[in-house]
Image 1 (cartoon, protein in one colour):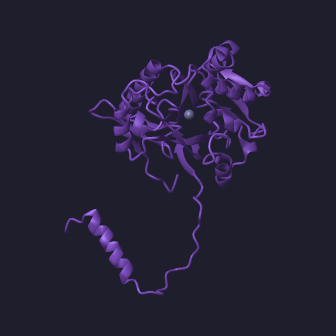
Image 2: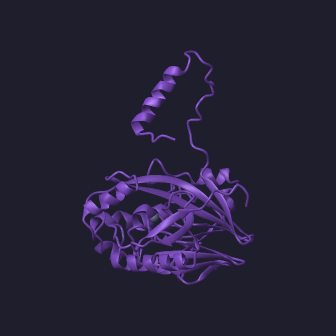
Image 3: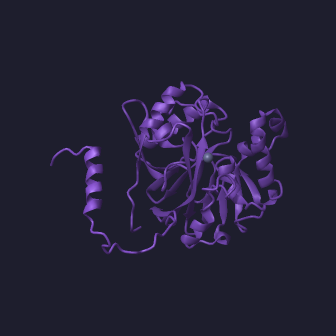
Length: 323
Ligand SMILES: [Zn+2]
């Protein structure tokens, strides 16, 4: 087969268009005009998991986005990942775990309060046949708004009326401390105020867990501080199978798995973030564990392999039509 250049291909498609007889019967099916539901099911042992796509935010970035490398290096990585230089693709995927006894939601999405292109968890739950009232337990990884805002709608009403809410104790201790809020840089103040909006009138529904604790049979929390002081990841175990839920240990893997030493401006403690990331990624790669990341491209699960350059590559799962 001859080598075809891009120019040859473009010329070829132009020729094909010319060759199509005018008035030929091209099917007049109307465009769907919208995406299909963002749900993906898989099993861990006897547990049925449903990845629920909440949408995507294109986070504006500048040359201060990564603290510890020159922006030219960041631009090189963005080019390699086919990403623009001024925004970071930030998809959101929450995970529902049906243990057979409890329906557990790990983080809640944006509640439609971060970006007009996100806020689809409830629609996707409906597409998955799950009613918000059926969620028994919400377990929060950390207190950034893209993880907690889906507890409530824009009008401050609970979206999951029957769910107990479990939050990491160290996360609550840091963010709900008014002295920390008053000492924070002005840009962080909105984060503290948002947490008070979400939690202050529902404290009776909220319990605090110690990272390390099992919050439901088969769902173990693990401390993963750095991104925030109480940032937590989860191990889901059933039978002989396991999944590591990496939360925000790394955001988009094309940037932060390939460059695990990069400290993003949004990490509260950059050095601790990196130590946590390498510890968890090394373990996942060595044990060939299935992992999911909250900001990985949908369906957000796959495996991590360690590369010769000292980074990691995310290998997405294959779509499974049958469970
Ligand atoms: Zn996040």
